Image (tube, rainbow, N blue to C red; front, side, top):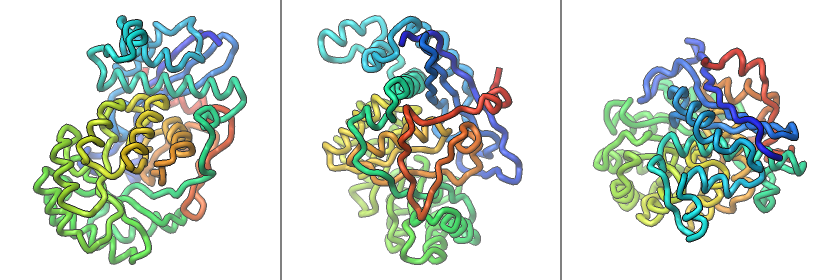
Length: 388
């Protein structure tokens, strides 16, 4: 079970022009991620995913080099099953022995950003290997699942007010979804324009379909509170990232001003960021991205924080199939988890990178029971879309 190789591949998949959409991030012309591959001397291969950007953008060259040539190089020849130890060593660097002996962190300078994304990808791959080696899914290693399936919501919603209802109704019909998410915020120009789109969506969907909104952190505090007042009668399931991830106090102020549940966390790193978010009473729902926050190991710690603060957990799962599968493992185990994000944007990394499918039936998605993450990577797809 010693690690033989660790490779990281930046994948960039062009999006056909007719399937592209525009948001506050700009025109989505490609879907990008970094695929991590770890092979052991026994021949087992595990896969992870790391992201240089929250959405599908981001140049992966630096992240791939960090995984393969820096963090990964230190793990060659080590036992792949020593996951917790490897996490601490990558996070604490040369002072990891102090951290482990003394029981508190001595983190490296890169304790946020690309370094933690790199740790995430390696960590996910190591859990995949461990599950395969024992012939059980990752969720079994984490204590066993407390649910067999979860509700899923369709994530998209970029259309203008005159067609947002039609777009979201298309999502509902596509998978029997009882919940949908739409984007709001800076791309609309002002809070009032976002509110008009939400009102149009509610009229089209009726009362029985839940609507989530996602501002991508583009409102300031005053705008976010104004938006909440304008949509007070639209019965929103949540408002996601109302303000910048750097403005925890502003997020808490928004939450205090509305009874719309507030969700956030896709742009945060490690349990320490989520601890601060919970302590500030800034959110109702924690949304770690497993390809960013620290992988499966750290997501379990964040899930425990959610339970301890009586918060709900809804991981950010907009990305490739590997991070989606990892998120399902957490949702199967964590009592605070209650719903799964399912991308309705054009996403080949979700549907074409692996042989398996993530099927939504009547608005629910089953938790797979295949060993590890339960994925079969399409090597031809990787070769076709790798960035050298």
